[in-house]
Image 1 (cartoon, helix red, strand yellow):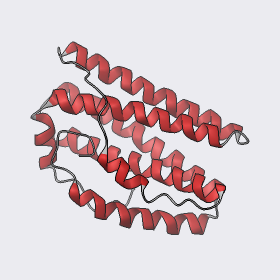
Image 2 (cartoon, rainbow, N blue to C red):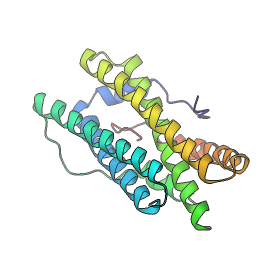
Image 3 (cartoon, one colour):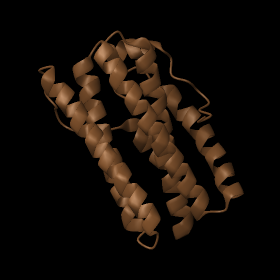
Image 4 (cartoon, rainbow, N blue to C red):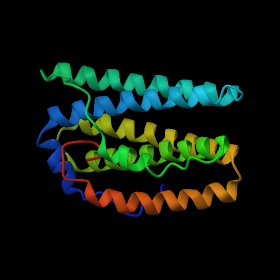
Length: 192
């Protein structure tokens, strides 16, 4: 579906499961940042009420995910901890083109789609490889949600820009992401 060029090594799930407190904290802050990103996109698209409506739904879902991860953290006696820097997302953001307003918004949609695609893929790896039954069910549910977000962002990019050009740009994003993801997959973080 996503055509990610480099799949996550399933052994990453063992790293994540080895420090659930850290992976859950990192995940919570990823959800908060995803909600913030949707709100930022809303500020760029006031003339598209249907997009604003959908982005509001995504922002609300991401905040709900943040809340649910926080509940798991508390239930397990862990502490939320401070927000984490996401090097993967920062590396991805360097690929956003600063062209026309439309080009910028389209690229920000593709940026968001890429993060959702990789997050979905990582949740699938967790679902298939961790022993914690509660988290298997939880990450399967979030995997489905992230796939829907990916589809929405890709659809908006195609709606805002020339579809052929957007599809070519998505291929460029996939190539770029395949190069930077090689440096990740060794830490107890969703993208790390």
